[in-house]
Amino acid sequence: MAEHLMSDKNREGKRSARERMLEERAEQEARSRRNKKLVVGGAVLAVIAAAVVVGVVVQNQRSKPETPTAAPAGTIGDKNLIIPVGAPDAPSTLTVYEDPRCPACGIFERTFSPTVDQLEDAGKVFVNYHIVSFIDRSLGGSGSKYGANALGCAQNAGHFRDFHDVLYRNQPDETADTFGNKQALIDLGKQVPGLDNAEFQSCVNSNTFAGWVSAVQQDFDKSSFKSTPTVLLNGTPIYPKKGDEQISPENLVKWVDEANQGKQLGTPGSHGQSPAPTSTAAETNNPPSP
Image 1 (cartoon, rainbow, N blue to C red):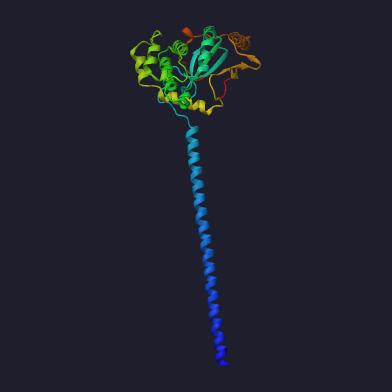
Image 2: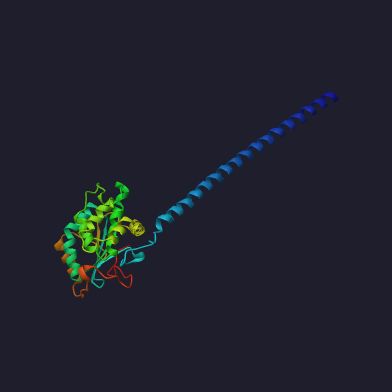
């Protein structure tokens, strides 16, 4: 009887030990699973955190425009990104965003530049040009950037308007990267008195205002404008139409005269090229955004 009781106790002892072992193993496995989840969860959170940091850095890089190390003489506005033409004290401001390779810009200029020149010379409008260069991104080449730099070189020499008109009168097909050839831009400069010289050629060849060109484009990227030409009269879009009226040289004159009614006209510089202002009060007549 005693041996039977001892045998039962031994069996119960073994069973209890086995159950404790199984319970301990189950607890270990449960702890292991929890630890794995914590490790994996921590890794995921770390990846997400890293992605957020990278995203913030990238966004900051996108939203932080360059400050150009050199800007053409006489440019105005924040970081001197705007080329002004006409009388700064004109009662109306015409704001124009253009890309040298943009075919619609070429059509606009060949159609409207004589009218715009007349409005400038009469002291009716102060024209603010933003020379952007985004077409190179989609089509490849360097014509937009080099063309914009050449326009900056012409501005620096005091002959922006004449060179601007010559450039758009001789604009190649959009897919032909003719302006990516710096000599082609130098040859166009020979048509403008005051640009057939070593200074202009060196400025074009050395891409002197590359940083300025990049900063102007970054400013355009931040804006709500997505295409060229973008044309605004006192902050109101007028291209391809103003309200229900289609733009035309006649309508442009009419719209400017209506905006200027009862206001004193400005005093333009020679040939409509405004002198370098002493302040950065560009686009003071109901400036557009940005």
